[in-house]
Amino acid sequence: MFSKLRFLTAGESHGKGLIALLEGIPSGLSLSPDDINRELKRRQQGYGRGGRMKIEQDRASIISGVRWGRTIGSPISLLISNRDWENWQEGMSADAAQQDSIPAVTKPRPGHADLAGIIKYNHKDIRNILERSSARETAARVAAGAVAKKFLAEFGISVGSYVISIGGATLHRDDYDNNPEVFALAEASPVRCPDQDTSDKMVALIDEAVGNGDTLGGIFKVVISGVPAGLGSHIQWDLRLNSRLIMAVSSIQAIKGVEIGMGFEAAAKFGSEVMDEIFYSGKTGFFRNTNNAGGIEGGMSNGMPIIVRAAMKPIPTLRKPLRSVDIVTKKPIEAAYERSDTCAVPAASVIAEAMAALCIADAFLEKCTGDSIDETRRNFSAYKEYLRHF
Image (cartoon, rainbow, N blue to C red; front, top):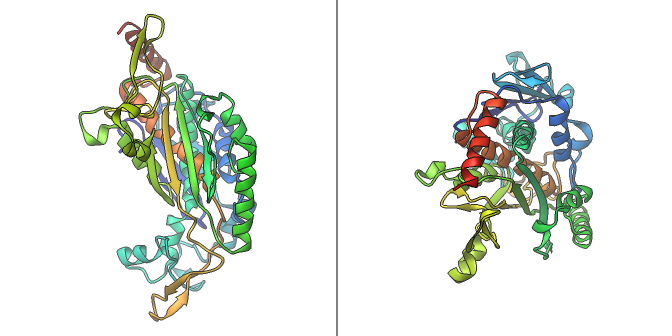
């Protein structure tokens, strides 16, 4: 998917740690562990998180690609150690001598990768699937995304998010995108919702779900500001910026729907109510008074803020287990319970910021490529000059 900027993650939920490998960041970018740890801390916050967040205090070690506080152009590798590893050294050991040191998991959970995964990979222990499919993996994505965010900030591009709904508690105001303080308000909320009354309702619903042994999903919005027109392309399906963003955000665990701009709402309207009319002034150039397209037309950025909304299903691991079938005995059972969150929508919005930042950074480097930050700046300056005189 990514062409100029490539990244991979590795690691299991209860293994030694998680690794992110990021290639394509130009040399000369100022980068410190604090830039990454700030984002990792944001991912761990949010009302409704489970006991794992009390154990882990994620911090990244920069293993390669940075020297004396600046990137050097080679692949950046990041390590996030799992503090819980000390309790799983035998159960998750790579040593064959530790085989069967803990019981196999044989009770697949509805809604998880458990059953499909063991069928695909021919496993008899669901732990071989759930360890990697766990949302714990997203810590590595957030670490890689933190680097992409730092890169984009060099060019005036910012990525933020806030939560629109959790369960039936919904933010009905639609003017927050024009409020410069919206992201600060979201950061101050335990559920990342900028409206206090709606935030309180969300917290109350999460408390109700906890009491019932249940879980909750919701919807969040990611806003990417400062993106110049012309990122992405219409010429092939996999170069379209909207398809890349949708793929990236929908790859996050438990995400079941992604929209750009007005999204599904546009299907119920007349074209005259949907299209963003085009205007021009000598001072600002081309501009729009509306942004129903969400900043992308024909697979390319159009200069307006890019708006991405995503729906997260309720977490499928329930304290009140659902019905399932034991993979060995084939008898009806209650699904296994693994330590889990009640609601992770606020965390998912932070993860989506990271994935969006990686997508936009990749598209930006396609347009204004450079082996060093200085070269990239020169190319971007030339492109901005071109846009000013178009």
